[in-house]
Image 1 (cartoon, one colour):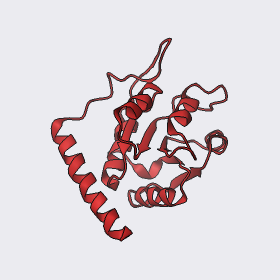
Image 2 (cartoon, rainbow, N blue to C red):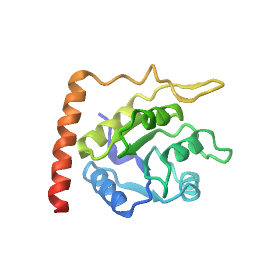
Image 3 (cartoon, rainbow, N blue to C red):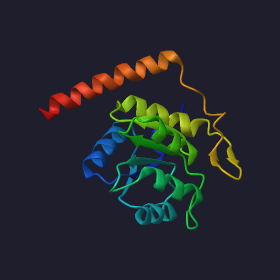
Image 4 (cartoon, one colour):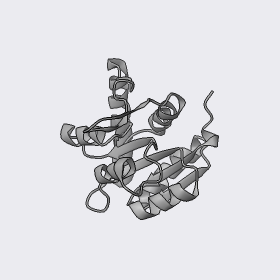
Length: 174
């Protein structure tokens, strides 16, 4: 069985509240090493000084453009780990934004809000059976063919969970 207590997570988020929520979700799942970076310089410094297993990157332009950040990890001249697994977190549900994220080499795109269970299952999916990386003239990142597609049943469950989480967020916001 995969042990989340043994991993280190980098939260590359510009929003303090989102970092706290993610850190709490990860802590409840058993993750004890969570690092926060608000920009790429901080992120690269954390990766250089620590063994980071996975990055959670928030897409919240203009404070942080998750597409650019993911691209810098993959192809940046000073990237300390171009193979770092990336889960891209976005409130933007447009197909073009999701496609851009996949094209820069993220492993998984998650639409916010999402339940903690979905986050931890995606972390386990990325780390327990990592895909090989592909390098071509136009792409560097995980082999998209190896990243298994989401079944219809999983999509339905995701939509139900997202609706439930959104209702909880709305209730808190009132």
